[in-house]
Amino acid sequence: MSRRFIAEWIEQLRPVFPSEAEIELHEANDPIITIDWPLRNDPHRPNKRSKQIMIVISREAIEDCQDFDRAGIMLKKIVENRYKDFEPDHDHSVLVSPPKEEWIISISDLNSL
Image (tube, rainbow, N blue to C red; front, side, top):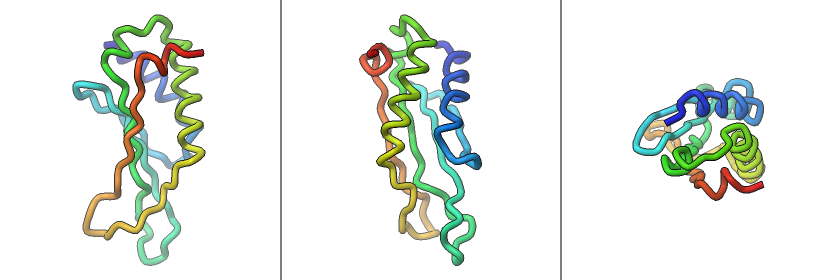
C-alpha cells in the first residue's frame, strides 16, 4: 500500500477541517483516516469532541489507483462536499464516545474526474 500518498492526502485534507482537528491514519484491512476536534460550544462540557469522521479508503481503491495525485484531488473534493452537510455536534452523554460517521471511498470515487 502507498502509505506516502495517503500521508500526502491527509495533508491536503487538513485545510477542510477546523484548525484544531486531529487527523490520524489507522492501518486496518482498509486504511481509515479519523478526524475530530473540540467543539467548544458547551460550557458544561468544555472538552466535548465533535462526532468522529472515519474516511475509509478501500484497499482495492489504493491498489488499483492509476494516478495518486489526481486521486488526492478527487478525495479532497469528495470530503469537501460531504463536510458541507456534516453536523459535528451531538448530544451523546459524556459517559460514551462521540458518534462516528463513516465516509467510504471506492476506486470509482478516486478515478472519477
